[in-house]
Image 1: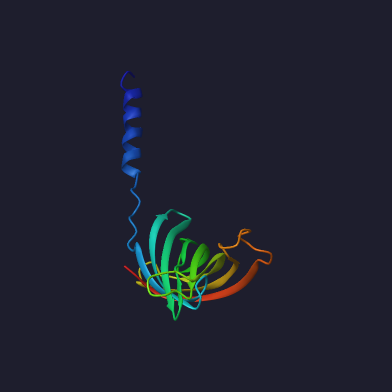
Image 2: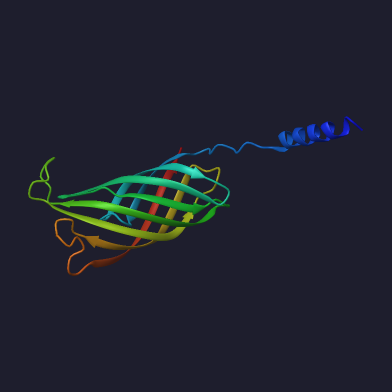
Amino acid sequence: MRFCLPLAIGLLLLCSFAYSQTPALPKFSHAAFVQLGGISPVYSFNYERLIRRNIMFTYKYRIGISLLPHVVAIPVGINVFDTFGNHHFQMSAGITPYIEDYDTFTIKGSESLLYMGAGVGYRYQRPEANWFVMMGLNPMVKLDPSLREFIGPDPQFILSGNLAAGFRW
């Protein structure tokens, strides 16, 4: 009888260690993709990095660049999507500093704008595959940081769509 209580406690502790599992590390934590539309002017080349993955959601941040004649834009954002299966519902939020009429490596005389937006969409990404595609809708607001009111007398709301394809490693 004396040994029953310590034995029961020891067995319970041993069982909890025997059945515990360490979470698997994600196989792919980096991605590069080309996006048409979205919070970029026309297109952007993006890098995406895994922040966190749990049972329900995957969190990633992204940064990109878009170069057009006389325009530079740098989209930065966060993507969140569900973790189950191949088909994912995706939510995103982002901001894009946008410089028009830039002169080689100087922004003297240029006009800077700021686009802020959120988005919802669809992402096809198989857990074991290296490639993925996504598409969605991005409502945005156009801000002018040079104005004192920042938003200005008429904030401009824009609805944009996006289509992207990329590679994970």
